Image (cartoon, rainbow, N blue to C red; front, top):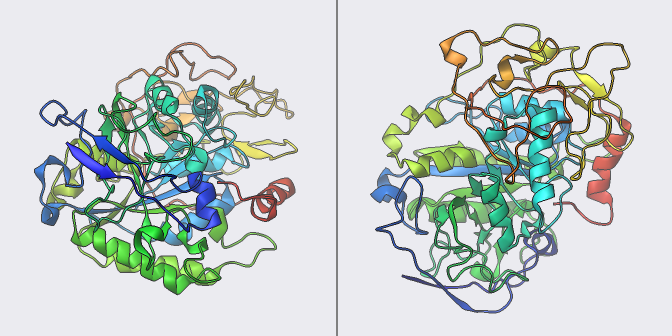
Length: 505
């Protein structure tokens, strides 16, 4: 049995408070009990600060989780690319990251491109609301599949906006067959005997993090909520010179620390100290959790934060200078957790390889060189977007996440959405044809229920019946991302996220 003292986090910057839903209140003591003789991999794992599978820290890889939240669009992808595009993991594969996607100001064509390039697309609700219900969570699944061409079974992860979750949310994720959540946080340093920096674990015996978050005390931890098989990937905090009283989580380069303004040198030292503590200890993953719009290099009318950009790259250069450091997605981490593998053998795992889809045909498939001139342009006044899969007749909403496809103004036929038996990179949505003809891109169908209901994939949209299936094709390639035409309303909307009444997380 574990006995964990919940951290009372104080003096957090207003920005991080907004993301976390406020610092934990109270100083309660919570128990976590898990029967390791019954809870065994690959489907169950107790919360623990020790590496899984009995690995020693010396044999354990050091994982860096680079995640981004909110809209996928040319500005945010340019932001992420300036940090990751040229980096490689120890096996020579390009590094990958997880993008928790909400739909406001998202360009679906960029969603497709980012996924086909080998990155993970995860769910962040449709309209970015805290304490989300099933309509927000499942509606995002449906819209990302219909307009982004992301196979339903490939959307495995979820993060609650503002990290504002409820116990009921975990049940919704279980019902909709998500693999993991990453909304809870670890707020005690790994060097503290009472650290809550656990390796990812399943919720068979309840949550072991964020026990004191405002509004959910008594509904989480102490054995609650029990959600067998659902993984929790804690978000690992970093700390300034105050230790547990100086916690930083998302976008730490925006935080004040002990000074009166954000300080890149100070932030770099915080990140290096936290990374070193993880690396020299039990190798718990290190997280860089970003809202990439804040460090975008090319926002019209906004000076690029060059100093901060250089600092983040300096940190990543430094981190990758250590032995056995891998920058990976949350999905890759869970695959490794299910089958813990020594660092010396990690490059042999399928999840860490980097096959490239071999498609040369001129089709709209998320590969920029193939789809030039083929994107449908959806001219909605609030945020116009592009998609390979045909414009909806109205903006998707939680009540109607997959509206009927609009009749194209150029007289062309309706486009065909991704079916259940073809990979995104090999699907021609204009001809309605799958170009996969070899065993290299074939796979077996599986099924996924979305909130207990079935959802149609393929066709031309607007249907909510039948059950989707897909086995992932792990495409990869150093594709240049479409930055194409940027629309005035999108520019104004993005600037509004930064300069408006509040910052959206």
